[in-house]
Length: 421
Ligand SMILES: *[C@@H]1O[C@H](CO)[C@@H](O)[C@H](O)[C@H]1NC(C)=O
Ligand SMILES: *[C@@H]1O[C@H](CO)[C@@H](O)[C@H](O)[C@H]1NC(C)=O
Image 1 (cartoon, rainbow, N blue to C red):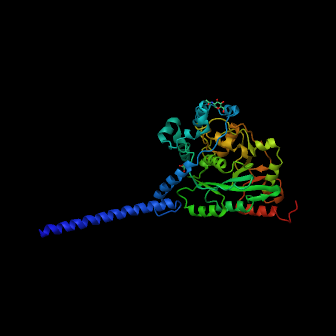
Image 2 (image 1 turned 90 degrees about the vertical axis):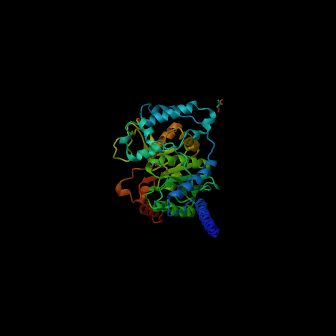
Image 3 (image 1 turned 30 degrees about the vertical axis):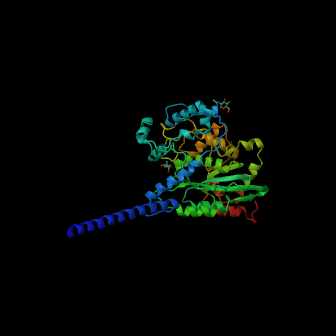
């Protein structure tokens, strides 16, 4: 009798001990999950899990603010004729989207988002569409799999950027996370925000994705920078060369949401030197008709895809075949803010392309805008002996490329009271 009692007692204690341990562990799990959700950019010793938790919470938020009003859209005949119908993957994809557009009812046209399904395409599926995909550079695989993913969450926003004043010019500068020094040089020189001559308001945003998993984590420094300078837009996608058309698309969308009234946009790289006053003078001098359909810079006409696999701009024959519409060099160009809604809308019917300035040229052509050349844009730089000469730069609008020190020096010299040109 006594033995059974002791046995029972030991069993009871053991099982309640088990229960206690079980519940305390459950609680631990809940706590970490909640903590992570509260502080999305905190990185912990186990980086895998936090990322998934964070992305799902931010995604939910992004969905609720997605819809923007889109204007009626016409896709130009010139563009349709310019891009040949043939067996190349991109050409087929484009013409299939154009057929969708032509047969869509009014409701679908107003909300083209629904056509895209971000389910990264499998290798097998791609292979049935592109026979020689094995010969593509490895990074092309990432690009192809991401072609349908168009709605990455925004990690750092600047919703008040254009809120208070009528903005005349917005600098939208493509940068990548680790280019802290370049961004600071731009802020201190040609990208300085504020009121310029003749009451013209200028604002600046830097467009960024995320650094690669092989890079050291820069999230905290970016958070600080975003808060300190209020000019960073950071999206949750991998910031690579082939993802630049995705950056273009999300930038158009951001502009629709937050800066729809801006008069002009400068889109460019973080290693150019822009002459802000000369740009403002030029924009101010435009006739109303020119001003409302502006797309200007250094124009590259009659270009075709480069077929040498060793270069950055390589495009395989089975991916795209045809000429490139005339486009402005991506180092820096200007366009009218009132084209933004049409550009955003049309970018739903033009598949992403590995080269962003070519993609831009296609979007402009599709909405019926032809680029005009301006000789002040030197995206292939100027003569070596003129590169430090402030007088030579007085009449130029842009030169590519300058490092932060050259940018600081040139800017200082151009604005020196001792300068006589
Ligand atoms: C679509 O919109 C146009 C004008 O915006 C209108 O003329 C046309 O009747 C509409 N079609 C349908 C099917 O609602
Ligand atoms: C573009 O970003 C997405 C999302 O981060 C990523 O999955 C994809 O690999 C990137 N594409 C390229 C070509 O780097």
